Image (cartoon, rainbow, N blue to C red; front, side, top):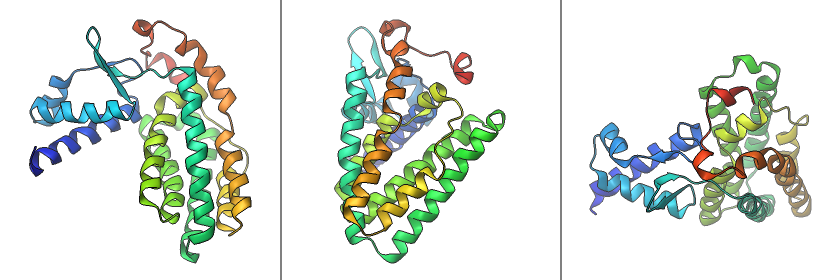
Length: 242
């Protein structure tokens, strides 16, 4: 595939990934590659390339009888995703504490305050939250963690953190938790620890942050993950108030 084909595959990849993260295609939903190709005005080939990449990243799965669908993780896999997240982000935090510039340290504290403010606003006024505003909150939350990864001065580590974040944060979790009220200054306290320059403090704060609510996530996911795969696809309108 030439450069143009690669660009089309990347475009298809970003389109499908965005749909997954937004909840356009809930867990278990079948993906019709011909429909996506028509929507994007491309051939099926770049869409197939994009789906292969997403399958490698554990976001979709293919089967002879079910075609390609949004992958339904098992409870063990979700725990595994969180364990990997802890390992990746703790290492990034340790490297950030050692290597980040003064401006990078100031930036993540500012970003953290913005994220905390958005979460608090969402918890205070859940009736005003739209799917688009929730998606923007997720993007800002992701960017906060990725800026810590950027400060680690290890591009491969940053890449792996971004992939892992896609596995543990998407619209499905918003439907489970509803309007989440996090502890006061939840992200600011993490940012201050990471920006302190104290490697061990950064390590402890990151572990505490990542482990928060894991058991609650597992508890709330269990009813869905124990369903037959043929029935797992969520009714989006029904679960908006979960």
